[in-house]
Image (cartoon, rainbow, N blue to C red; front, side, top):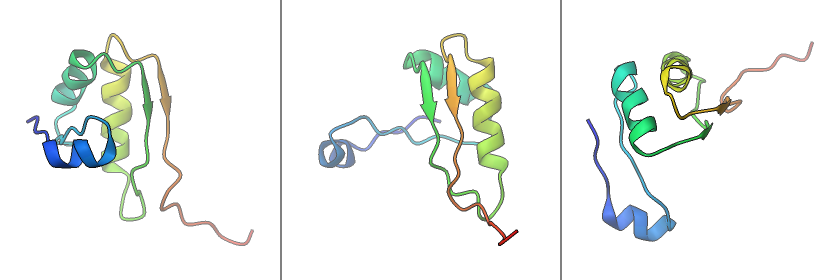
Length: 80
């Protein structure tokens, strides 16, 4: 499912795409349709990494995506 928000796009000055992270095939199609060569993830994985893993798999499946930069947000670090 692909949705856009014109007001949010105007506010940010960029395209905004809402996606379903549970559908890897649809994610890959969105990456290809929008010719996304590089994905820079800023997903908060503090509550689980399922969305991050799905996006990694979709980027790997996409014929146009060449580079994936994973998120480090929400990672719990220990003092050790």
